[in-house]
Length: 278
Image 1: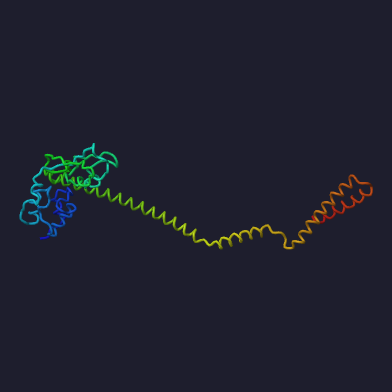
Image 2: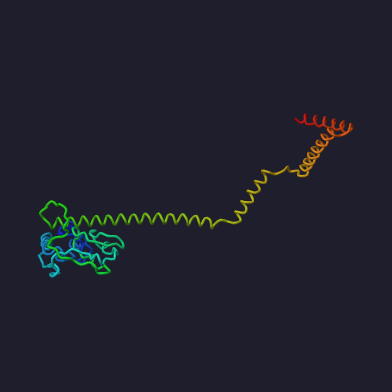
């Protein structure tokens, strides 16, 4: 008879300790559902979990695989704060976020949330974590209300499972943020690279031709008449006329009678000429 892994998973203590040889309670439940694992591998669950699994799967009850470990009392992790170097290795290993601390700062265990999984022991580089036995039959001590609030085992399992889910959601959010930041940096890098490539693909000859065209346009805007010689002659004639005007004015004021008469006649003709041009 096939039993869904979700039903099996509900009977496990949710410590995610991996002492069964699988990467957590859900993978172990999946293996049991497929008939690939024995029912006596959950050390934290002990004989209570073995009996429930045997009843659900309709198989005989068998002794725990690790009898000595199963008989030991429950224990919670304790950090020697004087020896802690703040490496955060234990924080990353804890499946229920029961260790509090920051990089290069002292860490401490939230004892009410510790499930006793012992996963924080191997990664600690200075061996400053030890397991302290407690009288509790089920961990963690902090428990959510269940339909059967008298059943400490399932209340503890629900609390541990909730903490495990919250941790996975937090890690997922962090991973998503990192991916978004990485994509933003990659997009910025791509834009910069494209800009640099565009700059490197500029043809110097095209730039020169563009500059020459611009200079030609500016020259056309301030060019002189096409007949340059005629323009020069006009400028010379204008200068000569101005000189003659100044000379006539001077003779009219300071010259003798003859010079004054000639200057007066020249000024009369000059005036008539300018009046006719207007």
